[in-house]
Structures are given as structure tokens and as C-alpha cells.
Image (cartoon, rainbow, N blue to C red):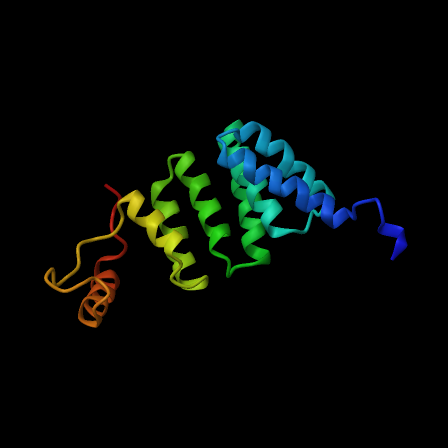
Length: 161
């Protein structure tokens, strides 16, 4: 136990870098955020969140869309039930102009990660949701949900505006 007194463990160092990455990203400094993400990934290369954010930031900061997509896909392969990993991959697709793939990724995320409000908000932002089938009922009403699923099966996903 005394071995760690006054020092930080590698896991703590990775988390510290990752927290700074998120802070830099939130402040709009994607290049700086990428450096922190890479440091965290160097410490914990099998962490799906470090992989995903490094991929996202490689796409955003350096326009390296292929590398970003590969890292985000690898992260999803490790942990397919976390909404943020789908959001990051969808953002890589959006940044590279691949809107339909972004929509498909977010729709998979709704299934795999549950009906996360961040995924629903991202889909709305892209503009991919169609109007409810029965407009005077809320879209979450069972009639609209059933008819919407049927429409989706018959016509496929909606096209982005």
C-alpha cells in the first residue's frame, strides 16, 4: 500500500489525461484534447473510451477519418452497449460527410445501448426522424411506435434532409 503514497498509479495517470482530454474538447480545443487522449491511450491501450475519443479527435482535429473510424469501430467491438461510443463513431461519419452511415450507427446505438436521450438528440439534430404516423398522438404512443416500425420495415430508414 505504501508503494503508491506520493505517486499516481498508471490507471490514475490515464484517467487524469482522459479527464483533461474531455475538458479540452468541451472548451473547443480539439488538437489539445487529442494529445491528452493519445497519452491516456498509451497508458491504457485496451480502454474502449480512450480508443473512441482518440478516433473521434483524430477525425475532428487532423481530418484522419479512416483512422478515426477504425479506432471507434475497435472501441465498439470491445463494448457495444455504451451510447457514447456510438455517438463518437457517428460524429466521425458526420465529419467525413457520411450522413447515412452516421444515422445507421445511431440507430444501432438505440438498439444496443438502449434508448439513450443523447442518441435520440443526435438523430434529431441530423434531421433523420420522420413525422409520427398519427400526428395528433405523441410519437411515443404505442400506435405511432407500431406504425412507425412497420413503415421502417417497408421503406427503410428515412433519408437525411
